[in-house]
Length: 137
Image 1 (cartoon, rainbow, N blue to C red):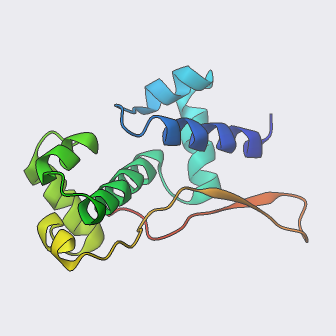
Image 2: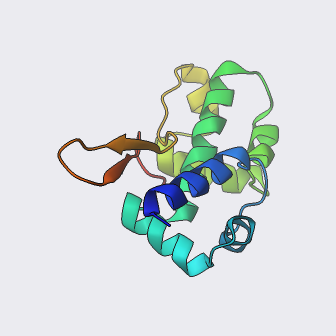
């Protein structure tokens, strides 16, 4: 099976389950691949670990909620799979260079980790993956 097909399955699964607990074991089990194969393939194709990608996607979705809703920060933190507002604030601040409260006050959403998309290269026989924004810290 090609890496392109595996990558599409990994990214699709992650995107569909971002609101749930996502471990490498769970992803591998759901997709019927070894966790080592999935981790290696993802890192080789993107230059990033699955964990950092998931964290960046969750924080980006949280940033969007901070700007577009009045939902309490603690609720957004729990939705992003953080066990405390303190842990969420620390991770958010590392990626966005400000606290969630300041980010909400600024009122401007900018994604730091968009969903990975497949980009074909006409001059090569393979494909590459584009990762929007910056990776989580």
